[in-house]
Image 1 (cartoon, rainbow, N blue to C red):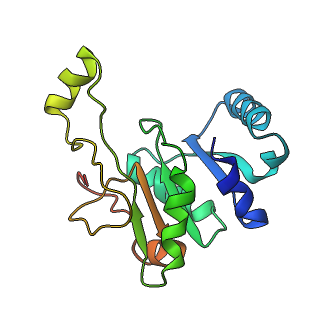
Image 2 (cartoon, rainbow, N blue to C red):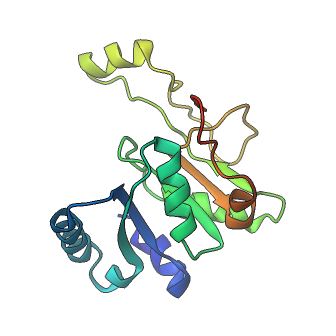
Length: 162
């Protein structure tokens, strides 16, 4: 886990796990697992159930529940690299930065992942470091200034990718 970055947020940092509404037993179990993982930081972790049916509707609901100045979205199909959160948040030290996308890619190191990478829309892993302009970003690994996100949010109609 990215505990150092979470610690640097102090009382302003929180993690919200968004899941489908219903089944409080699962929500309770997830909360307990996250508490065991995050230990003394467990108070900064919340599991919320939303009735939204679509991908971006769920993200919008999670963002609406958030209290921080920076919103970071990370999906279960992304495995953060070391210092991922720290570097993502550091980009916001520059006041002109409103949106930062992490590097989302498929690592083609097995037969299955190579086959999957052949038709998936994530690009190959970049070896570039630092900030760079981008023509598109992925919603599974991205951060926004909360004010910027709340002014427009994700679209909730049609198909939206990158």
